[in-house]
Image (cartoon, rainbow, N blue to C red; front, side, top):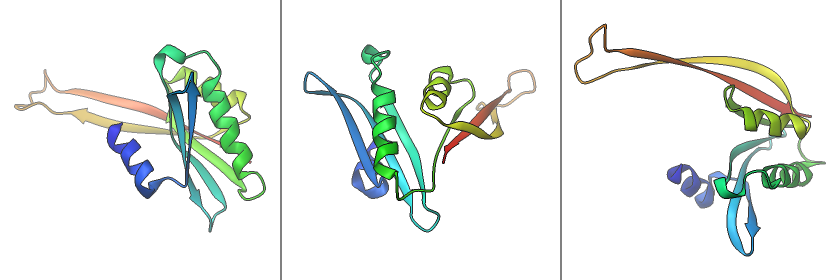
Length: 130
């Protein structure tokens, strides 16, 4: 996560919003802008665990949506299907599921054997608002 934040703060992100509580940064949302497509993307959003349930994720998302009103035709975000808080947040902010992807991975160990190799698959939902 640190490298994503660093990349966003050093030019990857079009814009970053910061949530503060008592002057301390406790959350942020970074967006990407694809002007040729008129699409904005929620690239990274995070809120300090101690501040969950305060509506900061919703406030950050709504600030981002307000910023791109009038310029973006669509706002998209991808998240893991198992991330129930993110699913609820995006749906409560007016996003709808437009695609459901499955990604597969196989964990390899130093000396893979059939009985020790494990496999993992994760579902990913993509939302859009537009």
